[in-house]
Structure formats: C-alpha cells, structure tokens
Length: 343
Ligand SMILES: [Zn+2]
Image (cartoon, rainbow, N blue to C red; front, side):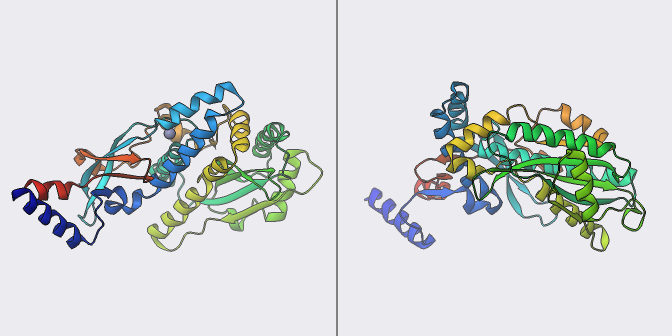
C-alpha cells in the first residue's frame, strides 16, 4: 500500500512537471551557457574513435586519453555578482589536454580569451588611447603536402613584417587557423589583433588594405597579391562599448585553430593536422604585448576555471553531471524525484 502510494505520488509528480518517465535531468536544464559541453563531448568521442584507427601509431594513444576526458563535471551554485541570481559554476573536471580533443580545444580558446580580457585594463593603462586593428593574413591555399612548408613561410613572413619600418603596431596577438576550402585543401591564415598608436588612423603610419597586401606580399617574398582583410576595432561610446568591441574581436581571432567538426568528419584530415601541427603554437603574442602575458604563460593552463571571478571562492562544488554516452548529454539522476520519493 505504501509502495503504491509512493508510485502514484511519483507518477503524479512527473506528470506535474510535464516530463516523460525519465528520471534524468540534464546540465542544460540548469545552465544554458554550458550547452557547448554536450556538442563538444560528442565531437570528442568521434575524434577519439578516429584516433584509435590512425595509421600513425603514436596518434593512437590519443583515443584513450580523449575518451577519458571530462567524464564528470562537478559544479557548485554561486550567486551572480550583478543580479544575485544563483548559477552553476564549474568546480572541477578532469580534462585530457589533447590538442584536438574538442572539449579541450574549446576550453583552451576560452582560456585565451579570458587571459586577454583580464589584461586589457593594464594594457589600456599603459597605452592610453591606443587602438586595435583586426588583421587577417592569408596565402594561396597549399595542398596538404605543402602545408607544413607553407606554415613555415607564413611564420617567416610574419617575422619580416614586424621588422619593416612601415609596420604600424607596437604589439600583436596572433592566432593560426586552418580551415578546409571547397576543394578540401587547407586554408591556413593568421588572425591578428594589432595594437596601434592613438594617431594611427589619421597619421602617416596608416595602411589601407592595398598597402597591407603589398607589405604581406613583400614579407612572404611571393609573386602574387595575397588576400588580406583589415578592419579597425571600432569602439562605441563609453567604456562598455569599447570593451564589447575588443572582446568580440578577441573571440573572433581565437575561436579555434582547426574546426572540431571538420576533424570529426574527416579522419584523414585529423591525422594530417595532428601530424603537421605537432608542437606548433597556435596563439602567440608579440612586441610590447609580450610582458602582459609572460606570467600567464608560465602558469599551467587551468582549463576548468576560466574567469578571474571573486564569486568562484563561494563555489563549494557538489553538483555532479555525468557524460551519458547513450543520451549524448551531460546529466544526472533527478534529485527532486529522489527527494519526493524519500518523503
Ligand atoms: Zn580533452
């Protein structure tokens, strides 16, 4: 009798919630900003599968490492500093740190973003009124076979570029990105954020797109005009507007080095990228911006705690979400139902 009553209560409770008979609740039910975990973990699984069959023996070990990445995410409830709203904040997770693990690549790019955001006020203090330029430098797409040499030439070209007296920046943050073009050839390019003096846009140092093309062509020592895209990071009025503009430029410049879905969809692409980019730094800082990152670079990357947030200290953990392979989502047994049944 008691058992039946319990069942009825539980069924009524479930129907009250308008949910199916499943007793699972998902991470995304509580935290929409953590949605990327589900898609990245799915991609990581497919990438791990490919690695297990790599023709290069040394790559096969990545399969096991990636499959053990982020099996459990531990969160804690913290209150948002501005709104006071309770939010889940990641407390602990084991991450495999394999470069092309989709979860780790995503966390790493976020880490870079927060690193840059955290030093922006110091940069602004030391270089008041300085502006940012968003520069994309490309070359003619090489074949896969030519990619390694091509990357070497691009790096040498970048070095040359910085030595020219016409080069207008005092410092730069540069990300390397390789996408796949429509013929499945690699399309390597640099995205760079250049810090330029306050008078740059109206002064003698200003370079228009044509002049950037000429300079990049000279630096690469090539006989064609490479595609170059250049835009100013336009601050809207007020500090908030300025921050938003530079933040979105940073996010765009460092969003990924090789797209995870392109790696998951094409095992050969994955094997080749792993081979060619082994030991290659995907993000680098140059010139006067280097000192701002020196200390940060020494620290081992903490890919769990991204924000320098005082609220983090209030995070006690204790909320666990597991990767559910069959559901392809992070979730856990419903606490509320348990509690209801226990009554
Ligand atoms: Zn990982």
